[in-house]
Length: 266
Image (tube, rainbow, N blue to C red; front, side, top):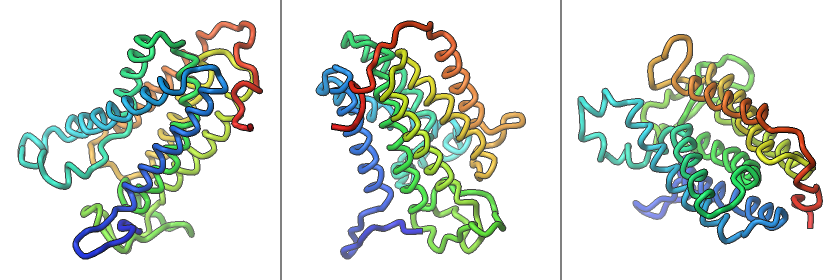
């Protein structure tokens, strides 16, 4: 759609990379502000965000290799190809690795685990909303053929060589971006109200996993189906179950967070 932001000779700046950077900085800004309102140390929260971002990149690449292990075994040279190095990888793989690393690091820093994860949830959602705009600009993670009025046609496969051109496709990147934006708005309202620790991150897992599971039906999958669903959908169901269990195990108690303590309003 718009894979290159600008070009000077052979040098160019990819739109996807710029939007991913904006997504991270926006999510971090929201998270650190929520940390201050919740009485958590912003410097430690920033460190967690940076380390989790690195862990997420590693996890996304690792899951990408696992999903396409057959291709890499047949042609090991692909591992070091420019296409592989530039590929974003599998989001759920990055999220799972970042979630595990974040849990361990939060415990090591002796911070309240669920309360800390709660303040990260809105920032993650808004970061995803912006990041999916990057996917749309690059033409990656494209949808199935769509003959509805909002079907989109890509004119360039510069960033994604396998992208089908001049065919009306479901704008699944925009579907997910809109869903993530709604989830961000909803979570921000929840984190600004009295809530029990773990409630916000639990809601994020349930809402995002539900949205992703549904959207996957309209998306083209590089990996084969595992039974009736794609591997991504199975992972989404597992994370949805984790979120539901987290919400169910939270015992009613006195509210631990006051609205004025976590609102983004000054």
